[in-house]
Length: 313
Ligand code: BYC
Image 1: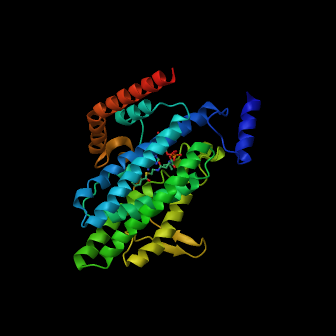
Image 2 (image 1 turned 135 degrees about the horizontal axis):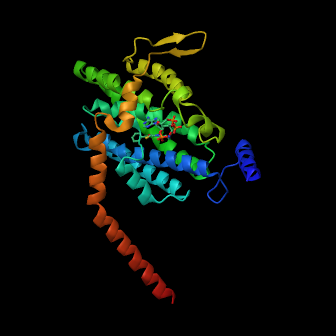
């Protein structure tokens, strides 16, 4: 057994991708199922805050763009559920775990979207944070996850640009539009920083995930990259980030910044954020209301299969 585990780790060290039929330690399989399924759930639950604005988008063009973006998120969820299925987990089990509250999804989607500017802030900040994390995941050690991420990242970069474009338009608009833009940035900034997870010193999964190259950069490293990137981009908007402690550190060649409210982070992760209940209720309702579609699709597939069998006979 030791020999097999050593061979597995050597393959990881040599940057050889692990594929579904390769031997892998149970714990590697388990942590991947946990992370990939939670990632998939985030994409699906993440459709809700933006979906609420499709009917209220300010123009036909904005509506079409937002609709396409929200559809993309559904697609990301599907690629990711499929990647997790290659590890032997059933789609039904993953969905049940989301609905029972056993599986997590990103904390960010438990905040309300109260103005059109929130669509811009989500695109710029939330998709921006997601891209930094996901570009790293394109090199993750499990083949199906890494390949799914390549496609997802291409779409995410379009999402980020559409968000920035919404904010740029508002930032060049009336005083009310400018204020709306700043307000959305103020509300989404800290929750976006929380997307990267707990501090490295409190991250339970990081050490092992780094050894297995599931993660390539730590939570804090990615969060720092994100802050440094946003400081530059917010200047283009002529807006500010809501952190009085934000300043350039010449010695470290990076920005120093304030402390995240970790009590808020853990409250949201544990189910007590502003919209946790609403989001899970929406998902459970959609699942129940969609039962007839799943049944009809299964009946149609069974009929087609029987027809093909008959033709082949
Ligand atoms: N929210 O040991 P740690 C998107 C949990 S969606 C909730 O550091 P890990 C988009 C963590 O699960 C993008 N829970 O964990 C969609 C763990 O608990 P469990 C979503 C969090 O896994 C629509 C515990 O805290 N992206 O792009 O090593 C519209 C300790 O943490 C959070 C992904 O899912 C959180 N923020 O690292 C727009 C990326 N943070 O599971 C955009 C894939 C931590 O042991 N996931 N927890 O019970 C990852 O890269 C990693 O799972 C994380 C956390 C960096 C998130």
